[in-house]
Image (cartoon, rainbow, N blue to C red):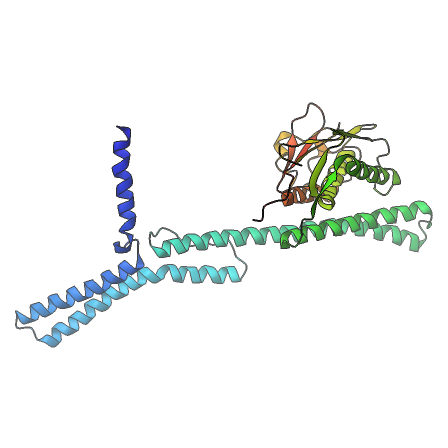
Length: 366
């Protein structure tokens, strides 16, 4: 039968693993035990030779000590070599070099330690790379609005531009952009530190989303953004009208506001952005969709649109796109993850369709 060949093999594997403490190649304890046994055997053999020959006992003793030391030195070098290598790699990591790794070819406890050490080194390298990229990206993002604001103020001070309402609005736009970036960075900092609580409650979806879209519409028409989109129509579609959901209203506001803002920026002239809400699969669950009529997101980039500081390619930019900070969709994903839901780019015959699902109901403590 097919199982007859696998059963002895599985039994042999379990037996082999059970004998690991006795295998000098897979256990440091067994290696040390083998060292002691070997030393005792050699000493006993030499004493036996001394008794049955004319060799003096002190000569045999000297040879016994030398042989034991040589064996001990050989075994000790094999056991401590990984520790010496880990020490050298640790010193390199202390100097900022996270690329070095420890050889992990051993099968004993030192081999397990080497594998764990390499995983830790890889994690530290990833964290260091992320930190450097974050500092570089944040510096770049902060520099843009600060340079714009400085240029406006210098023109006013030098008399090149008059402090008229249009100039002040330009300065205000740069200040607001800087404020939005700082607020988004604070949100991400709270996310990384795990200090953002989730205050979920039950609410009616229609009036809630209507309020979010009203705020978004006022922001589009106020001229506070570099390219205000007064021509884009916001449409709300909730079915059934009495639909209710269970979520953190403030965090969900971040999700919808960022998705709508992104959709408006990438909409064509006189385009339409639709926010669609339906009942999810579970009790008080919610399925949200934000659909625009823009150029859409290339399939090759869909897995990256929710990454921090990712602003997409030029093909996906619309007439209202100003480059942005690349943090809005990352914050939206964070807020959805906080609820235990999912967010992603769904297939759409036209434009871009972002789909959000929230599980609803109180989450079980993890």
